[in-house]
Image (cartoon, rainbow, N blue to C red; front, side, top):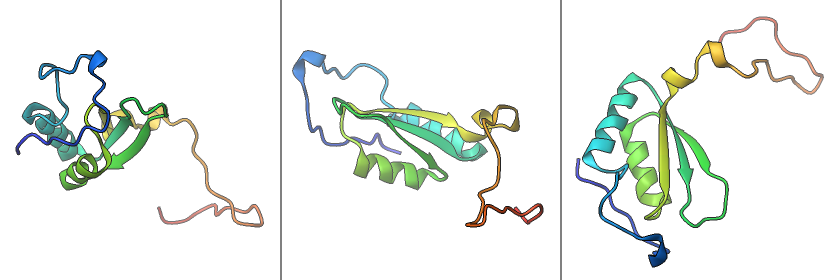
Length: 113
């Protein structure tokens, strides 16, 4: 797959833009992401370059989803951090687990999940 490139909405020159440095959309980056996707979904944390906002987090299950997200939702300079869901999200590190109650506050004791 060819390296993905996107528009630059705010190329602030004092930030020292360069062609060096790791690009998440490089062949090496895309290969690492595909290898992770072969094991299961990935978690993507999207930091917005000069965005003055919190990062956006999403789960991706197939490469086409990731490529579409990059092409339509990112700008040059953004940072994407990627984790393998099955390697990071295990039963050993669940923060909380419970059922969502209905309007009466009841939850099923059983059920198919």
